Image (cartoon, rainbow, N blue to C red; front, side, top):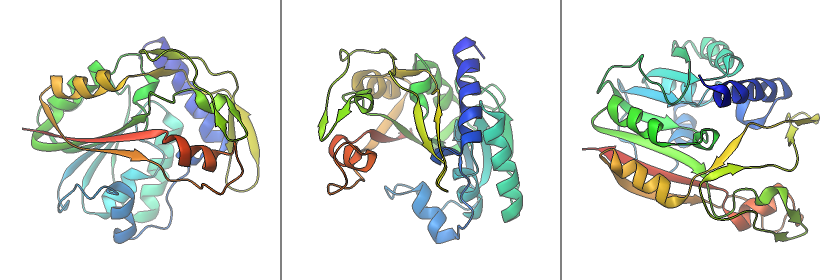
Length: 257
């Protein structure tokens, strides 16, 4: 793990301690709800017996959802605190995922062609170059295996630091590179406590970088979605209002031939 990976690991450990939304376990799932959580785009067939890698997706969320669907689950995450949530949440459901502390750019603990589904949470933007991630994903996927990738919309990356009323200001040129945040993350733990936490280092990856990077390793793109879930009637400048107008997350499904 390089210096960027180590820095971001510390940041995610702190976000776990603050109760960030993306670190809170899913504690009340049944198989139907689990399916909705991990396949909102309806791209997956029957999963029973499938080998699934939750890539940089710790926190006791997707791992238990796939486990409830009958999958053999491996979770790789840089944050040991995130993996601890996977361990304790799995115990609650009677599941036994394999937990790996590591860097998303190094999947050397997994054999070639050993995985049916790689499910990558919103994490690609925490590494400066996505190509090593794509190369490793393609290597571990079986023929016909699927890769779900969610990443930050590069057109609006950084605008959430520049919200004023209902106006969202573009920040920085449209090029690959680090996105300098001007304020810490405002973390609501879901129980009323708000903590300001220094966030991880983030990197903008343009559409050409991501889409061409995926196809360059031999994966065929099978679908593309923008996340516009939000609230048009919410207070202007609020996160729900911003999400409805700016589509902060993009999702790509691809398949190995």
